[in-house]
Amino acid sequence: MTQLETLSQFLDTANTQFQVYDLGRRVANIDPVLFSQIEALNTPYPYPIQGHAQFAIVFWREDQPPFIWFLKLPLDERGLLSPAQRSQFIKMILEALGRDPTKALTDEEQERYANHPFSFKPSQEKLALFNALVKKQLSQQASAQFEYAAQYFAQLDETQAQSDNWQQLGLQGIADVCVRLDKFDHDKHINASFSFAPLEVQAAVCQCLEHVTISNSLAETIFDKLSAADIEHKHIYLRALSSQPELTQKAIKQLVNFQQLDENLLITIAARSWIALKDDATRKLYLEVLANQPQNFFNQVFADIVAIPSLRESLLLDLRSTDRSATLSSAIGGLFRAVSQ
Image 1 (cartoon, rainbow, N blue to C red):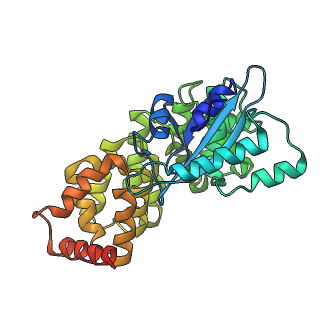
Image 2: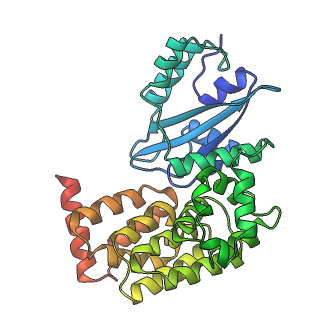
């Protein structure tokens, strides 16, 4: 019998179809070819967070409801999956399920299996967006909260905004609307909602928008809200621009000019808007502000973003650049000292 070395092999031999979603930084579909390369240890995991890959595998057979695994597997210093832990998980699966991942389990087996060391629980916002995205991609009906949320945004005006109807909104319903922005004028309604909706609703919408690609028109509206927002609320809107790196770069420059790029916003950029840091000028601004924070904070954030494969080479070059301030040079020196201890 063929030895199963990867999750893809296991699911293929079980005659299931499957999709993979990153749940570490943004909820995003991972291309099957890319995932195969990741599992073959030929490509680093593209969205590492705190030294791990956090992802979901959704798999199903024809005419069966899908099954879901939420997995958190460690990465090595190159960003590759650690094969020992992956093999340990596959061995555990084979012991529990044999070669049939859709096998029914007893209550005792389910409890034991659910608490395995490689599982994790996504945040409420990511879980809502993930559920909405999976249902859409598998052509399943949206949640029971979808209809109310769609009606709320379609009918929202200044009068309704002053009522307490928004308190009946569920995050899952908002997520269902946000993954369907290209349907039924949802994009137009969400765009208009930023003129009337309470801050709580705007924050929930932005939590969902950070995981989807938004239109230029909606992005411009959110950028204007970001520009006008109080400093303690700017991160709400900045995270929603994560699919629009050019506007994010513009926002970062604006925040730096007004000396508003605080620790909260620095973390938001690292966690959600790292794509904007591919731009050399933007990354330089970011690092200079980051260097003015406490040394431990600088070390933690730099370690987080330098682990992202698409940023790693540029950031390592930044470490050796002579075109930097004395403050950044000092922070980099502190980083090296911390690493060498």
